[in-house]
Length: 308
Ligand code: UDP
Ligand code: MG
Image (cartoon, rainbow, N blue to C red; front, top):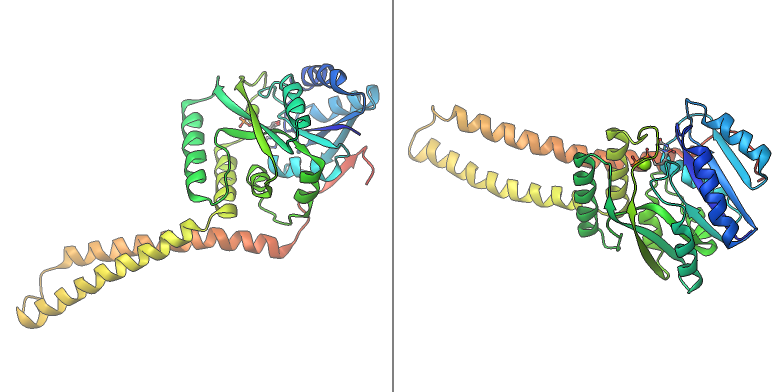
């Protein structure tokens, strides 16, 4: 098998057949040994019957049907686990990632790169809020991690079999695939493209899913939040020490100890707030450790036409 294309699918009934047609015409130009793996991530619409119908018509269409919605990163991971290709493409189902770009990416790979990711020059048709938060997030992440995670890049990319095999050996449960792939190294490069509007349907990435992906990215690749908490703790303690000296001074030297309720409340609330944040940050890391220790399977397959 030369190429595997992994397509995570969550409620994409209006995009699937168009996506398949465009993918097929691109892949037919490159090789005749390819497969498409549609991973149905618990869609509640007609996506799965449509994929099944395609698979009856085209032997290159494979599918994995999850028992429920496990999330985009997990869906891609399942595809990686089952992929047979020497090169693996990850692409969204909503045609925001143009399949035609795969030709350029594949060519670049043949020049000797193990990873060719697609970097967005521009994104059309997305809310200002999403554009702004995504932009900020990628920049902050690249500042606080020691590895070089490229900015303005999603999971749309082509990766070599070698990278796929290493990814399969990485046991972490909180997946942030683009970070893991950067972490692995080898020769990586990019091609640029203009990100299109989603063709039909609506985004499956709710604010909560975005937030949890962002937290997975940060906690998976940076300890800086924990360090900030520690530094902050030190600074506040030093400050508190001087406040204590002043309190003793005013109590015993100048004998002024009735007033001061307001300042006391402010200090208590302030330190209380900082402690809550600190505990919350530690909790984020702990819950991820806990997830790894539980060692539950990442996903559950209800149905598939792929062999093990
Ligand atoms: N997706 C998924 N599971 C989810 C949410 C999304 O498999 O829980 C898929 C979705 O079908 C699409 C891709 O992940 O192929 C990207 O999702 P989406 O287009 O909704 O995200 P956005 O482009 O708005 O960030
Ligand atoms: Mg999309």
